[in-house]
Length: 214
Length: 324
Image (cartoon, rainbow over the protein chains, first blue to last red):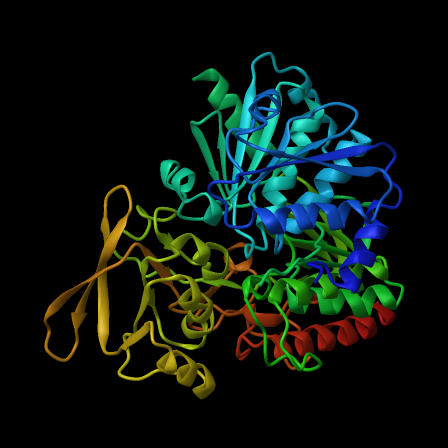
């Protein structure tokens, strides 16, 4: 039984038909404690089957600890979306519901290395000189969450100093508790600045500015 | 158990600029419907939305009474389709652009000024800003927003897996949006001010039949308690005047909606609840300025009616532009 129905598969094919460069989906499972690891592996393989340019690598987070460390992955299930280089795009949990869109957009962005961000935002990001970690907490049922998630991922594409972790909150309750996530989307910049809701790019830029000034 | 959705996830911002035939403020069901008609008719059409398009309808988990979808459809999916339909005919859409003022300059020219200091020009302007969830205005509501207080059960429901939730308001919205929360939560208590529910019977039946729900009527919520996070809700039993405490980790508020009209308050006629008054052709008292959808007086806040409003405005605008 496939996870994606024929209509969705066709849409995914269309979306990925013209991606220029190869993309690797590196998926990390956890043999000890993982509710949806089987499904996440199946999902990335079904997505990869729609495009010659998308390949899947699969690891177990404890057994392949070196690989996990190399990609800065501390928990599973996780997907690292890498193109010609590693832009720092990570998805934690299964990208189901509306978050499936986030996965597809991240594949497009990692493949092309291009974004729709405007020049002002790009120039701000290019001028960064300190690392910026964007964590975006989402749920699969939240229609606005992909906006926040894709924005963070696009920012990571522009600057090597920015990385974007999109986290399915319900699958990582400990992390959601730690960050006191009670509403989504919630973006957290460098563990300090919080942005609630699907904010426009300039608001995220402001939050980055504040976080770096602190 | 999983479903997978593909939506457009990037802010819309492309625009040609210049003088538009129609500038529509608000990209919900009403505004997008006008755009489908006017853009298809070859009129230069722009939609401005202060957030993302889709309006309140997009946050509705399941819409079951919109014709053409026998199994129901998620609000976001339906709104995505409607937006694509408007775009197919050339509607331009700009998101995250909040309107500050509407300024009629002369017959056939109305300016729309935005918070982003942009000015858009339209021969006609349509106000389709809808309404936003009403606040209770009680202690704890603002302080605990994002810390357990939420106005979007569809978005935040999954965060309360195995936890206790209070939903304030047992009308259509409260019950409709509370039903999916029942799937996640340990228990959901619905607190209603009135002695009965004004919701559709089918929704009441579903909630009553659910083992994890309690419906409590005739209670006035006075405070949401908690410091770092919500701990519960205090309410007065209107019959006995006794104060009661309902422990909860999450509180969803569905006590009605307020029209979003601040930016045109001095320009058009509002009824006593703040909704914009129009004639049957959706015209306000300002020539070339129309109001449609939930923001309009006498609209029962149903999507099918908003779509009808959008259509009426489009037809009226066509005639207005022909005679300009």
